[in-house]
Length: 394
Image 1 (tube, rainbow, N blue to C red):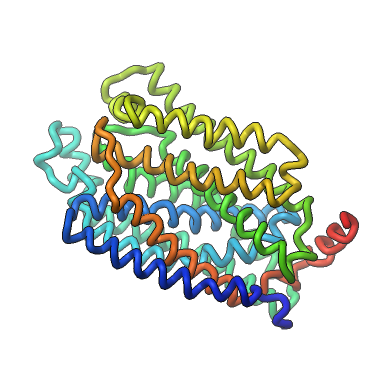
Image 2: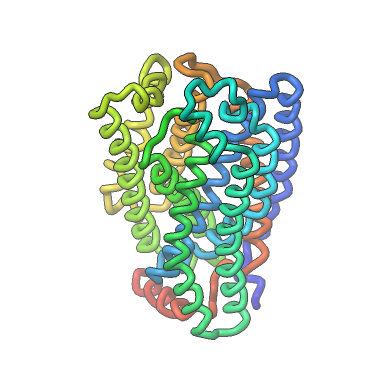
């Protein structure tokens, strides 16, 4: 395999810088463990969740592209695969969440559960042993799906066997269904249970859409950078960015649909046990953030992504993608932080350092994985078709 198909050395060299920066910031973040243990674990969950979403969302997009077999999926497959190979690392990073569960979840302390129904729920479902078992199952599903898809893709690099493509497609169908259910239950366990008295049937689907949206925005940012250099310069065309932009628009709308549906159902019901989640999030500074999310996460991206010329221009499309990524972090903070602080708005230095520290480690490991395999799956049956489409466009 020619080395020209691999990650350019100037990009791969940034791996060490990112890992070093991430390690330094993570060491600074760990100081918070001795300053305010409760705040440390709450910030840890926030930072961990955002980057976990990129890997799990990439797994969803990877299976989607195996199902639809579009040219857009062919050019981004290796980026998605590299992100999914970080899931074992993220499983290790989840261990501190289990260790610090008593500082995150009220159901760990029966004295904080003020109704018999909550006590029964904590005894039967929300208890640390069962919570841990379920987490192992979720990560087992995600890592298992990623393992087989990456393994068969690597084998395809060595042997042009059509059976390998069929295997990946056959696994992706039921795998997508299993992934959606596992993410839904993980969101209920890890995030909705922070407020154990509150429940929503749409809450998990919001995370499904949000994680897929985050992953796609990240992929667009990566592809915009890679398409400026060899070997992707002659493989990625404007039509691919147009397709990615269309999918980005669809996911923006899907996320907005789930988020608004949850709000509309709870608002129309106006029941005390349901509105307790929204009350602190719609007043004061939290209300300003909610309005900003509405405008910058949905309104502006929706209007911009209607433009065909913008979707075909990677330099402009990447700006929309970066805006969405930034708003995903803010929206996640808006979803999690008031569960700990109520209406009182506060931002700890650990809330800022945690996602950046995780980001350095995640991005460094991502570049390491991306550089291990060719950027182009040249033995894929779509290879010739994609090159022909690019030549016709030029």
